[in-house]
Amino acid sequence: MRKLHVIFKRIFIAAILVLASILAVGCSGKHSENESTESEESRFLYVDNGYSACCNGILYFTEPAFGSEKEPFVYTVDINTGECMPLCAKPECLHNDKECNAYLDGLTGCNPLFAVSGSRLYWRSFKKEAEGIATVLYSMDLDGSMRKEVMTLDNELEETMNVGFLGVYGGKLFRCGSGEEVRNSDPVCMVTVYSQELSGKSEPKILFREEGYNAIVSRMHEGTLYVACFANGEDRKLLILSYNMDDDTLTELYSGNEHPGSAQSFFIIDDKLLFSGGRTAYSFSIGEKRFDTIWHDDDNGVLHISEDHAFVSTSPSAYKCIDLSTETALTGEFPSECLDGRFKYCLGSINGVYYFLFEGNVKSKKSVLASYDPNENNFRVLAELP
Amino acid sequence: MKKYKKILAVMLVAVTVLTCFPVLGNATTGSRSIYLDGARYTASYYVNIKQSLNRARAGITVNWVSGVAGNPCSGRVSVVAVDNNLNVIGGSVATFSISVGNISVSKSCSFIPDDNIPIYLAQGGYHVETVEWTLDSAPVS
Image 1 (tube, each protein chain N blue to C red):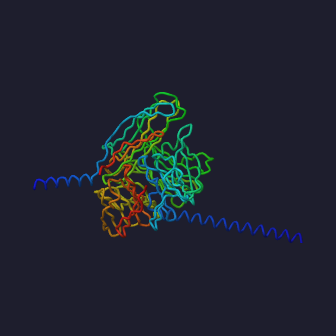
Image 2 (cartoon, chains in turn brown, purple):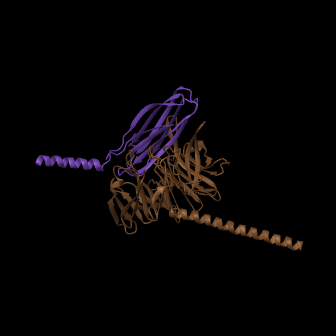
Image 3 (tube, rainbow over the protein chains, first blue to last red):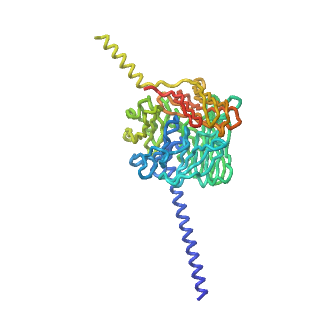
């Protein structure tokens, strides 16, 4: 009888273990599904602009660091309904002070470098300490609750990489940034890429650091971190790197100066990197090591591409949107409430719809978030930010 | 009557031009005193566009002048550039910190686009401790 009891006990433990394994596999499967959803939906969003991120149909953004008089609140937009609201579910909160869950303290003139990973929103902020400024990684749930300080970042590295990208993958932070040091009264520009365990217990690992480049754009895609380092100006050059975040290998994909121009961001479709946000939108084929022009506009400003369109402002108040397959152009005027001398930020495109933030640097002018759908050739004002 | 019509027409054109075309920024410099925690500092700052290099740059030098500060003096400097259609095409920001015992710190940040897009200065922003100011080149509408 006792022997039978031991056998049953063993079978029970084995069943528990099998069940636990199934649950663990199920959960990890769901996690990777979330990550792929994120990269799919935000494929044409400028993830390295520092002030927006997208996951599961929700666009998270804050007003760009354009003058420090702007209050740094996080807003969300449901991309299906266009509903825009502060990221705060606190009852009776008026969303107008530091107690609000959507308020990001300590930014004072810097972009938060948003990243969504799993069920958390990550961002970078600053904290005054006895030794100087501490750069800190924070995170919170996607409803604005459960805010926590993840870790203090390496100040020496962060000091020269304020503009750039922040991403989280496999329990690690990945940071890419450009900046400059003043040496003998001359500025020396550089780019840096490093990773660090989110536990903060290990030292940061420098993956790449080089002088002579003054801009960096980056993107994560299916376990790989892609990085493009630009040297703009007299000694123009481009370096494209890929870093396999699973096996820690760094590969140089391109180094030279045959690229068509600068870019604000790039996207990844199949084996191509699509560069957008310069006067020429172009692709780089990883396999063929070749650049191809997608669209070029000599007369106007910067081009923003989506799955099938290229958008460009033709004046401060008018735009042109080109269908890339038919090469026909739609034209129109920006909505009147978006003008008044406001500067325009393009957040990129999600599912073919462009998102713009129109911002004035005069206190009385409120920022306006608007979307543009090329299929309707129509702008829609989503929110006037307080 | 014709004269009034002409004046009205000129006024209309002027209003249209002022409404549609922004006036964008030039180089600016300045300095100011900052009192912090028992110490005095001076901040000299600049923001400019170097047309020959098509480069926007902002910088700051903070000098300790007198007093003993219990804490380091820290801050940020930033620059933002737009194209002639008011699209923000880039910017940069740099942080700095001057520790107790140090006399001076200099920091700059710059933005250089490629492909000959003419850039205009939108703003140079400065933040030292709790003091914020901007060298503002807002477009006038």
